[in-house]
Image (cartoon, rainbow over all chains, first blue to last red):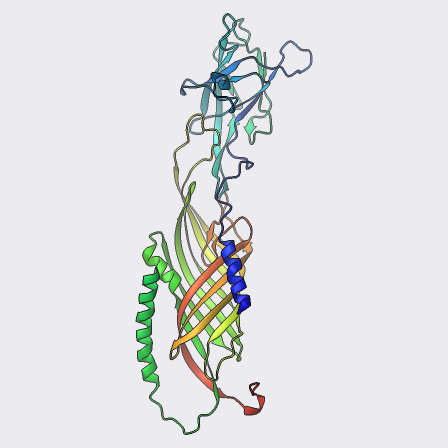
Length: 176
Length: 243
């Protein structure tokens, strides 16, 4: 009899459901990972951008680069690596890349359009599905003005990895 | 649910009393021979039955049976069918299928002669054949710059799925009226094999119930069953363990 009650007790503990919250470490829908490099260096050298704001025309605000800030500075990046969300409901996402945002005289905006295909994958009960992206083999990134143009601050783009699987990899290198 | 159970019990117990009366028309000997009754006990799981009434997204029935082999050993089986729709935050799916569990029970309760009450532990091997239909899902996007994508309807059906598992259980059965038993059992399940669909998972398996990250699962049933006596055997006084 005692054993049965013990078993009942164990069963009641098993009722707790811990797999109902999607763990933050689970790879889900990835963002596009971009690294910035020095265009003038003879070897590939990472270079920090200054006050880079990236914004879509479809959204009121820019992409948040610094979650901890509450000032408009949270939309500005001063690092050599940024993460950009792509639209999961579309196969094209257009971003305005504004370098030296708010700096009089040197503010410069280039527009890049990313073209890709999407595929959905099952993750788990708690996380549901994720979308993975594959950048198009031809013309995956279309600039509105050629990189050779003097007014373009972006000088070259290299696709490192066209299939976006997680955020621990670099997908695109931008030289400026 | 409490009330539904109560009514079900009352109804069944009423039926039981009639059946009980019908059986009592027998000529009694002046000296009763010491006999052990053997037979088949068949019943139904009230838990699944009542859930079908109060839960919109659930239909299920389970028939149970056990057969007394020796004073302590029973062979036992459950057969059932389930149709369950699960609506989670990010997924909505329907599982449909049938299952069969077979095994044995070991009775730890010292009965008086002729009684078949049980406090038991047992094991089962379970097999389920089922299908999953993914009704709808949402894309998990931790960076909803463009807003969260709406729920996507699917309707994709995965057929021909199977699972096998082992259960250990503990339970009790008590005779309420002549030959009528009520019982309950709790079960711990361990998946042995699980044929998962391509691009989805078996989040619910008929008979096994909800699956978790690991291989374990839990189950419960409340049964009413009727004991069909098949034969009696006389107990030889010398081999009796009782003093």
